[in-house]
Length: 482
Image (tube, rainbow, N blue to C red; front, side, top):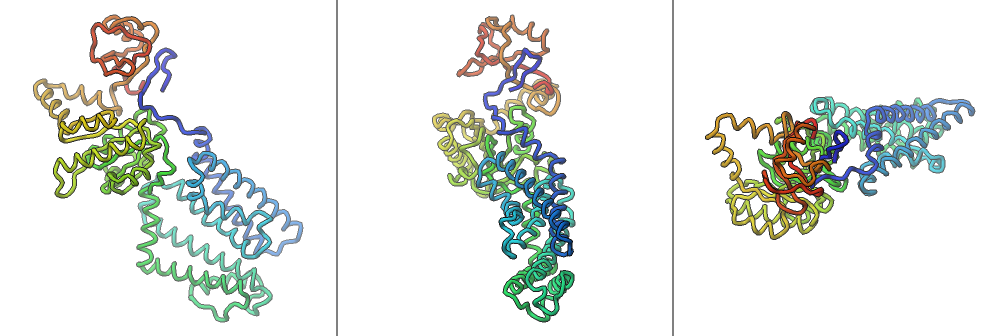
């Protein structure tokens, strides 16, 4: 709902509710906030390395630890804010468990054991996760080979630093080959590169660190040689490029079941509609492809995919049908499917969604008009018959030259004019259409084309209907004012 000129209020019957803490969410997702956190993480990692490898006087060591404590407090506040704007605690934990694991050992209470000190190095992985969450929208960067190189490099850096800190903690002064942290660093590096250790660690902790080094060594070199790389790097690229869906995070979203050439148009219109400016779009289909939408110049930043059969109830539950604000079920073709089979899948999905969430606005596309009554009885709000409107439109534009431009202008929010509902200004209440239109055109430049009484069907160009204060007026108006 949007207030215009302090007089006209645009309305939508399927308007999505704004997300909670929207202003706080915008701050957290801003580039400045993310850049600040990245810088603080880097500083924290550097201080951990200084604390471990540099022999500082007690006063300076205490200062480094105090700075790290203050940074820890900042990270805890950051995670608390992210938890506050998350839809569920479960989704927060699944997304930020690395950050939580990295923060806990930085608190003094968790620094009693040497193993827990090593866990502080998970800050490096936390840094990588922060980069991935922030920059997953920059497709050109993510589609290049530099992503794979960056992943492998991060594993190598983490393994070397982890091994150096671990061996320094457990083996210094006990193993004759490790007399200081520098020896531990070189021992870690050469062990990782060679995959062997000249003299095995003496302490149990050192053996555990070396075991993990071997695991990292196998993983890094397997990625470089190809097989392991094909599995791990492709998974990482999929997680950034294809935005795998975590439906538990979605709320007041739009579900589009089925995939066809219409999806690009549908998604674009939803993205442009002010009523859905806070809503994500979830595509539920085994055929859905964000890459295909990108090729059609669709902005996929707010679109995610759930590759599953949308006719199954567990899939629709997972898609968050109970929390969605609107659902569209398209006629999806498949191998050897008849139009009756396609309609049966549409009906099954639509009725299941209505069963899961009776408040949702559901629209469905059918081939056979005789099935529309089944959907209406099941609570489906709107049913579109495949080819019916396109056939009528083709007949009109064929008979009247130039008419196509009128429909193209009105049916899209990308440019020109669009159709919108507004609340009737007090001035026109009690008037009929013939009396109200001149005043609306003179004051706002809009044209009333239909009236929708509350809870009733739309009346197109009604001549005698008196406008009530709870009616909605369908107008033609410029796109930038919708």
